[in-house]
Amino acid sequence: MTLGAGQWTELFATKLGTTAPSEEEKNLLLELAGIVAHASERTAAPISCWLVARAGVDPAGAARLARELADELGDGAL
Image (tube, rainbow, N blue to C red; front, side, top):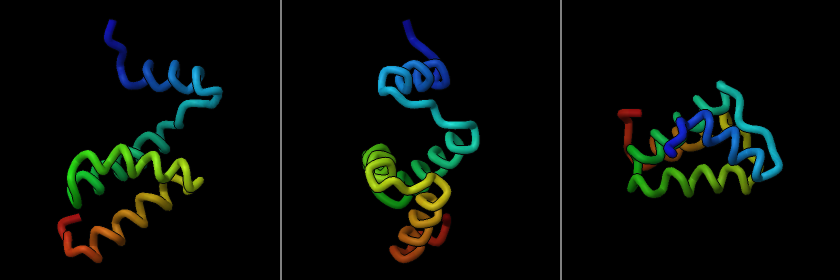
């Protein structure tokens, strides 16, 4: 059985003993993943999201920092 992203994250959050991200948080995390995937190899996106969680940084702040880094590296398209 294949679940939609919302169903998966709800169930996985429960297994992890936490709550699923809000719609705003989901959008920011997807934005973060997009920034990272366009500024580096795509596989860096999920690892970067993990780093955000490990560092305890909110998704909005993480997306801002990712944009700054991408700009520093010369990816002005973001």
